[in-house]
Image (cartoon, rainbow, N blue to C red; front, side, top):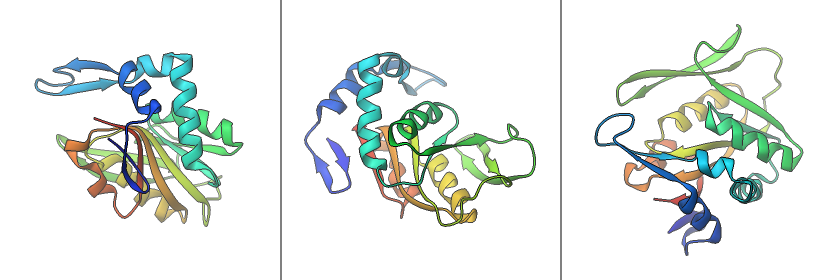
Length: 184
Protein backbone atom coordinates (compact mmCIF):
# COMPACT_ATOMS: atom_id res chain seq x y z
CA UNK A 1 0.00 0.00 0.00
CA UNK A 2 1.04 3.52 -0.75
CA UNK A 3 0.03 6.34 1.57
CA UNK A 4 -0.90 9.67 0.09
CA UNK A 5 -2.52 12.74 1.55
CA UNK A 6 -5.92 11.05 1.51
CA UNK A 7 -4.90 7.77 3.12
CA UNK A 8 -4.02 4.29 1.87
CA UNK A 9 -4.41 3.55 -1.81
CA UNK A 10 -3.59 0.78 -4.25
CA UNK A 11 0.04 0.25 -5.19
CA UNK A 12 0.86 2.61 -8.05
CA UNK A 13 3.15 2.11 -11.03
CA UNK A 14 5.52 4.57 -9.29
CA UNK A 15 5.67 2.35 -6.19
CA UNK A 16 6.24 -0.70 -8.39
CA UNK A 17 9.16 1.04 -10.15
CA UNK A 18 10.69 2.02 -6.81
CA UNK A 19 10.33 -1.49 -5.38
CA UNK A 20 11.80 -3.08 -8.50
CA UNK A 21 14.86 -0.79 -8.50
CA UNK A 22 15.58 -0.82 -4.74
CA UNK A 23 18.52 -2.98 -3.74
CA UNK A 24 18.08 -4.86 -0.44
CA UNK A 25 21.33 -5.01 1.55
CA UNK A 26 21.18 -7.36 4.58
CA UNK A 27 23.09 -6.58 7.77
CA UNK A 28 24.06 -3.03 6.78
CA UNK A 29 25.11 -0.80 8.48
CA UNK A 30 24.79 -3.18 11.43
CA UNK A 31 23.71 -6.82 11.83
CA UNK A 32 19.96 -7.23 11.66
CA UNK A 33 19.32 -4.09 9.59
CA UNK A 34 17.97 -4.59 6.07
CA UNK A 35 19.25 -1.47 4.27
CA UNK A 36 17.21 -0.16 1.33
CA UNK A 37 19.64 1.18 -1.28
CA UNK A 38 18.02 3.57 -3.77
CA UNK A 39 21.20 4.06 -5.81
CA UNK A 40 19.94 1.79 -8.65
CA UNK A 41 16.68 3.81 -8.74
CA UNK A 42 18.54 7.13 -9.00
CA UNK A 43 20.89 5.75 -11.67
CA UNK A 44 17.99 4.53 -13.84
CA UNK A 45 16.70 7.24 -16.22
CA UNK A 46 13.10 5.98 -16.10
CA UNK A 47 13.24 5.51 -12.33
CA UNK A 48 14.61 9.00 -11.66
CA UNK A 49 12.11 10.60 -14.02
CA UNK A 50 9.25 8.67 -12.41
CA UNK A 51 10.08 9.76 -8.86
CA UNK A 52 10.89 13.33 -9.92
CA UNK A 53 7.51 13.69 -11.63
CA UNK A 54 5.61 12.17 -8.69
CA UNK A 55 7.38 14.32 -6.09
CA UNK A 56 6.95 17.44 -8.24
CA UNK A 57 3.19 16.80 -8.14
CA UNK A 58 3.36 16.69 -4.34
CA UNK A 59 5.56 19.80 -4.10
CA UNK A 60 3.56 21.88 -6.59
CA UNK A 61 2.89 25.34 -5.16
CA UNK A 62 5.91 25.38 -2.86
CA UNK A 63 8.22 28.39 -2.91
CA UNK A 64 11.24 26.24 -2.10
CA UNK A 65 12.17 22.57 -2.07
CA UNK A 66 14.46 21.48 0.79
CA UNK A 67 16.51 18.28 0.47
CA UNK A 68 18.08 16.46 3.39
CA UNK A 69 21.75 15.47 3.43
CA UNK A 70 22.71 13.64 1.35
CA UNK A 71 20.50 11.53 -0.92
CA UNK A 72 17.61 13.95 -0.42
CA UNK A 73 19.76 16.54 -2.24
CA UNK A 74 19.61 14.52 -5.44
CA UNK A 75 15.86 14.20 -5.51
CA UNK A 76 15.12 17.70 -4.21
CA UNK A 77 17.32 19.31 -6.87
CA UNK A 78 15.56 17.37 -9.63
CA UNK A 79 12.14 18.33 -8.24
CA UNK A 80 13.11 22.01 -7.86
CA UNK A 81 14.38 22.09 -11.45
CA UNK A 82 11.12 20.54 -12.67
CA UNK A 83 9.06 23.10 -10.71
CA UNK A 84 11.24 26.12 -11.45
CA UNK A 85 11.88 26.80 -7.75
CA UNK A 86 15.00 27.02 -5.67
CA UNK A 87 16.45 24.18 -3.64
CA UNK A 88 17.82 24.34 -0.11
CA UNK A 89 20.35 21.75 1.01
CA UNK A 90 19.84 20.93 4.69
CA UNK A 91 23.32 19.81 5.67
CA UNK A 92 24.79 17.60 8.37
CA UNK A 93 26.55 19.54 11.11
CA UNK A 94 29.96 21.05 10.39
CA UNK A 95 29.58 21.21 6.60
CA UNK A 96 28.58 24.87 6.23
CA UNK A 97 30.55 28.05 6.96
CA UNK A 98 29.24 30.14 9.87
CA UNK A 99 26.91 31.58 10.80
CA UNK A 100 24.42 28.71 10.72
CA UNK A 101 21.14 27.74 12.29
CA UNK A 102 21.33 24.25 13.68
CA UNK A 103 19.12 21.59 15.19
CA UNK A 104 20.48 18.67 17.19
CA UNK A 105 18.40 15.51 17.50
CA UNK A 106 18.64 11.99 18.89
CA UNK A 107 19.50 8.95 16.84
CA UNK A 108 19.29 5.33 17.96
CA UNK A 109 23.04 5.41 18.55
CA UNK A 110 23.75 9.03 19.58
CA UNK A 111 23.11 12.54 18.34
CA UNK A 112 23.26 14.31 15.00
CA UNK A 113 22.94 17.92 13.90
CA UNK A 114 21.39 19.54 10.84
CA UNK A 115 22.30 23.02 9.62
CA UNK A 116 21.23 25.72 7.20
CA UNK A 117 22.91 29.06 6.52
CA UNK A 118 21.82 31.79 8.95
CA UNK A 119 22.68 34.54 6.44
CA UNK A 120 21.88 35.02 2.78
CA UNK A 121 18.52 33.22 2.79
CA UNK A 122 15.11 34.80 3.17
CA UNK A 123 13.08 31.88 4.56
CA UNK A 124 10.47 33.74 6.64
CA UNK A 125 6.99 33.01 5.32
CA UNK A 126 8.17 30.81 2.46
CA UNK A 127 6.22 27.62 1.73
CA UNK A 128 8.68 24.74 1.83
CA UNK A 129 8.38 21.05 0.97
CA UNK A 130 10.90 18.75 2.67
CA UNK A 131 12.19 15.93 0.48
CA UNK A 132 14.22 12.91 1.51
CA UNK A 133 14.92 9.48 0.12
CA UNK A 134 13.77 7.24 3.00
CA UNK A 135 11.54 7.79 6.02
CA UNK A 136 12.61 5.42 8.77
CA UNK A 137 12.26 6.61 12.38
CA UNK A 138 11.48 10.20 11.33
CA UNK A 139 14.11 11.90 13.47
CA UNK A 140 15.89 13.63 10.62
CA UNK A 141 12.73 14.96 8.97
CA UNK A 142 11.38 16.14 12.33
CA UNK A 143 14.64 17.99 13.06
CA UNK A 144 14.57 19.58 9.59
CA UNK A 145 11.02 20.76 10.23
CA UNK A 146 12.01 22.32 13.58
CA UNK A 147 15.01 24.00 11.93
CA UNK A 148 12.95 25.54 9.13
CA UNK A 149 10.25 26.54 11.58
CA UNK A 150 12.83 28.46 13.62
CA UNK A 151 13.93 30.18 10.41
CA UNK A 152 10.33 31.32 9.83
CA UNK A 153 9.53 29.03 6.92
CA UNK A 154 6.22 27.19 6.65
CA UNK A 155 6.74 23.49 5.97
CA UNK A 156 3.75 22.36 3.92
CA UNK A 157 4.57 18.68 3.71
CA UNK A 158 7.35 16.12 3.79
CA UNK A 159 7.70 13.85 0.78
CA UNK A 160 9.82 10.72 0.62
CA UNK A 161 10.60 8.16 -2.03
CA UNK A 162 10.38 5.19 0.34
CA UNK A 163 8.76 4.79 3.76
CA UNK A 164 9.67 1.96 6.12
CA UNK A 165 6.24 1.64 7.69
CA UNK A 166 7.18 -0.62 10.62
CA UNK A 167 9.46 2.10 12.04
CA UNK A 168 6.52 4.54 12.41
CA UNK A 169 8.45 7.63 11.35
CA UNK A 170 5.24 9.52 10.60
CA UNK A 171 4.61 9.86 14.30
CA UNK A 172 7.92 11.70 14.83
CA UNK A 173 7.24 14.06 11.92
CA UNK A 174 3.65 14.95 12.97
CA UNK A 175 1.93 17.35 12.57
CA UNK A 176 3.66 17.73 9.20
CA UNK A 177 1.80 15.67 6.59
CA UNK A 178 3.98 12.98 5.01
CA UNK A 179 3.60 11.72 1.47
CA UNK A 180 5.47 8.56 0.48
CA UNK A 181 5.74 7.24 -3.05
CA UNK A 182 6.33 3.67 -1.88
CA UNK A 183 5.92 1.85 1.41
CA UNK A 184 7.76 -1.27 2.53
